[in-house]
Image (cartoon, rainbow, N blue to C red; front, side, top):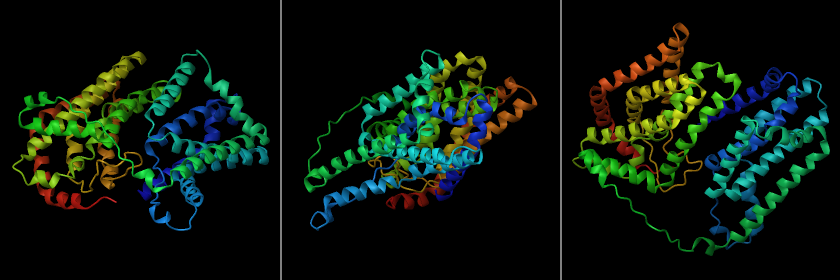
Length: 461
C-alpha cells in the first residue's frame, strides 16, 4: 500500500509538471491558466464525490478524556486538525506545486502564482470539511452526482456552457491576488461549522442512544432451482443486500457504466481504440473485479464453520461463478446505449464481456485462493481497506492488462474486427474448458483451505 501511495504521488507530480504543455497543445489559443480554470468546477465536484466513498473520517475515542481537564474545544480542534492532514489533501499538493513551478519558469508573475496555490489549497480544505458534514448522507451524494451529470450534459450537447460560466470565477483567483481571501474565508467558515458540530457531540450520552433498525426480508426461494448451489447463492445475495460494504460495490459498479463517456466524448481518446477495449473490460467486469477479488474473504467470518461441514467446494465456487456471470451479462446490457458512438463500441464491449465471462472469471477465482485477510462486513465501506493485500493489485495484471495487450496486438497487426473476434474466441475457449478449469481451481482451494481458515481467524486491523 505504501508503494502504491508513492506511485500515485509521483504520477500526480509528473502530471502536474506536464499539464502546462498538455494544455498548450490541446488549447493553443488559450492560456493554460484559463484552460484549467474552465474545468475547476468539475474537479471540485468529482473530488467531493470520490471523497465520499474513499476518505476515511477521523475517529477518536473520547471517553477517557471526558473525566480529565482536557477541554472539549481542544478535542474538536485536534480531530479536525487530523482531518486536514489527510493523504487526500496531499494529493492536490503534489499536482499543483509542480504545475506552479512550471508556470514560474514560463515567466508567470510570482505573486499571482503563489497566491493561486494558496487559494487552491484553501479550496481543498473546503472540500475536506464539507465532506465531513455531508458524509453518510446519500441524498447529498445523489445531488452531487446529478449536478455533475447535468453540468457535463449541458456542456457536451452545447445547451449551456458551464465551463465558460465558471471559468472567470476561478481564473480570478490567479488574475486578482486579493481574491485569495475568499476561499480562505470559506475554509475558515466551514471549519467553524464542523467545530461547533463536533463540540456539541462530545459527551457520553451521544453514543448511548439506542438505534432502532427496521429488518427487511426478501423472498429468495427462486434460488432453490439451482439445486445445491442455491443455498450458497441465497447466502451471497443476502450478504450483498444487508451489508454496507458489499452493497456499495453494487452501486459503484452501476455508476461506472458512465465511465465510458470519458473516453468516447473526449477527442484525445477517440482515436485510441485499445483504450476503448480497456473501458469495455472495465465496465462489463467492474463487479467481477470489485466483488470477485475478495472471494472467499467475504465469507471469512463463518468460513471455518462452512469448511467443517459436508459442503462440496466445487458447488461453493460454482455459485460464485453464477453470481459473477449474471453481473457481467447485466453490465453488458447496460453498456448497449454506447452504440450511439458507433457499432464498433458495441462490438468491443461484446468481445470484452465474452473475455470476462470465459477467462477473467476463472482467473479471479484462482487468485481468490490466495486471500487470507479477514473482512468484517459490519464495518463502514468508506476508506475501508480490510482484506486488501498484494493479491488485489497483482490480480489487475491478468484481469485488465492482458486483454488490452492481446487486443492491441491483434488490432495493430490486423484490424478491429480481428481483435474483437480474438477476445470473443478466448472467451468461448474458456467456456469450453469451464469444467476442467473449475476442477483445477477447486483443488487449489482445497490445498489452501487451512491457510485461509487460519488467516480469516485473525482479526483485521
